[in-house]
Image (cartoon, rainbow, N blue to C red):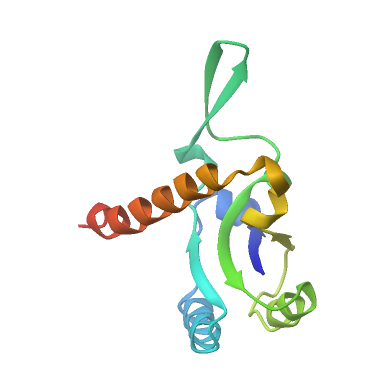
Length: 143
């Protein structure tokens, strides 16, 4: 199963305070352990919400709201995408993270089979094509 591990924002991450060299080194070591174990599929930190925007949808109307956003506890500061056997395994990995404070959420990612018969073979093929295009373009976007 795949899970998204969501690192919540705090006043420091929203103020643009960067992690210490020590925490970066500890996080690098932790991420390396995850990667070597075949758990980590992706992981990134996010810039403060002051550098972001939200788009609110109401019927055909689209409203853009520029950051920063007020409720820090509802914001995401970073994430991992992990491949694990169970939620319990994800919890055990997360307990080893080098965080001193804060809260981190684990959520299971939907897989194709979770959508049942409504997710037809044609829609599954389309999803796979989109994933392949994204993977191919991912390398090009970084250049």
